[in-house]
Image (cartoon, rainbow over all chains, first blue to last red; front, side):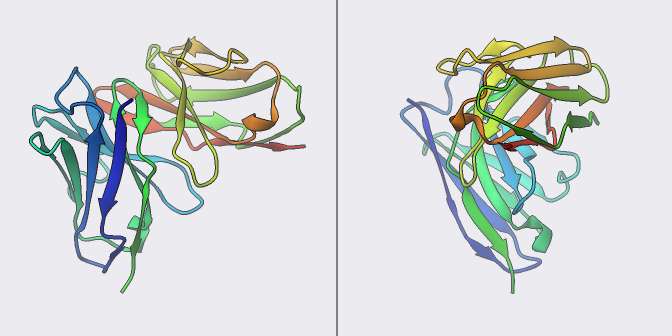
Length: 117
Length: 107
């Protein structure tokens, strides 16, 4: 059963870059036509899709975040990563990674990122 | 960009009730609609995809219908484990959008 695990900095200062990694286990990031997604959820609010990457390296981003987001893939480590630049308090959220097709069927447990000085 | 709305935003119901949640898209999304259940402190769980296909392992009391711009999630007989927040999600033009969510709580 495929599993995803987020990791990265839990506290980021304003204006700095948030960096997270999603490790894929019990399955290959290069298998099938899946997308590898990042989603976030601010405290007490709904879900916001950030973007995804295919194992080929092709990316698609939420237009509202596109200027600040970079998603990359490391096939040798079977993981993918999120960088979000110029963060503000509004970027404080639980960040999830998930496997996708036209839906997202496998999710990580999420990691909390707080933006604060 | 396609916008998603859900109604109601909150629904109070009792165990055994039939519950229906509506999701609307700002333009046609064919059947590219999924539903998720989320409980506090947990990741979302996929319930239904392609508007009406039940994910493996999801109880048959959950069902989905609709196409184009209007979709519904129905729980035929609400169980104690079903009190949660439900989100719809669309996928078109390589982009995903989630609805704002519907919280189902105990009446």
